[in-house]
Amino acid sequence: MRRRRRMRRIRLLARAAILLGAALALTAPLSAQAADPAPSATGYSATTSVGVHNAYLQETFPYFADALDSGAGMLELDVWTNFFGSGWRVAHDNPFGNANNCENASSADQFGTRARNQSFAGCLNDLRAWHDANPGHRPILLKIEMKDGFAANLGRGPAQFDALVNGALGDAVFGPGDLTGDHATLDEAVRAGGWPSRDELAGKFLIHLIPGTVEEGNPFDSLWTDVEYGRHLRDSAAAGTLGTTTAFPAVHGAEAGDPRVTRYADATLRPWFVVFDGDATAYTTGVDLDWYADRGYLVVMTDAHNVPPAISATNPTEAQAAARTAELAAAGASVVSSDWHSLPAVLGTVLPRG
Image (cartoon, rainbow, N blue to C red):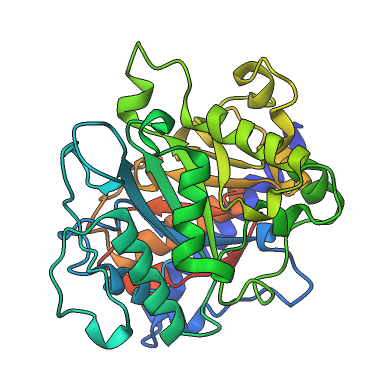
């Protein structure tokens, strides 16, 4: 174990030095230099891309189409469902309405011309319009934080979420049914056959869900997003309807060992979690990341800027962000997430994982 960690540290430092030198010395955009290195046979989980936290905020990108154009491998949306407002809403700290950069466009020629602050359905329509205008686009992971969880009693539960996503995006989504195939569970599928390659996922959106900050802090909420959607996947598989599901629930928060064992007392839920999402510093201090990579699990590392030595969350130099991306890719991240929206060259980076 000690030798493996030492070798990983050596690889990490070497990769960071290479990326740092490239960012300082080369004049061509890093996104052009960092074209996907993975051959067709290499699985999606064997690569590392860069994500943008709260990509729906107008101060992050004026329009959601700008976020899609940025080259980022992951974009985050916050969704509210409570009875204080109608429908599915996208906002950061407004539980009553929408506050975002989505336009509800029906075609790409409407981008940048329509009113913003649209519902979640409007954001999905932007995704569809952009997808239609960019066939074969890079695979994009959509991270959705369910701020206050699902509200099935209001018609805003997992099944209704799937219906909304399917209605807007249809076959543009790579979902649990696609990954599972002939296997019994998601865990069995990724450990047996792995994820498709980036080439095979071209033109696809993937979605993962995490419990929201309000939900996790609500003492009266005993059914969090991860458990509720995990049950939905398990039950859909039993009913033969897994193909209608659209999202991968994520285990939220880094911890040593298999966190599914301590999180989910119901063992039948555990095989439906193959995405893990948590703080980058926590993942890189005391967590065996080879355990995730060896099994084909995705690891989304958030707050990448805070890994010591910390760099700016919003305005690091391109060299700093590139080096941090390389560092965490070498450590075992599938996605390196921060608020580096002003660095498109870094956002388009794709590196080998590990």
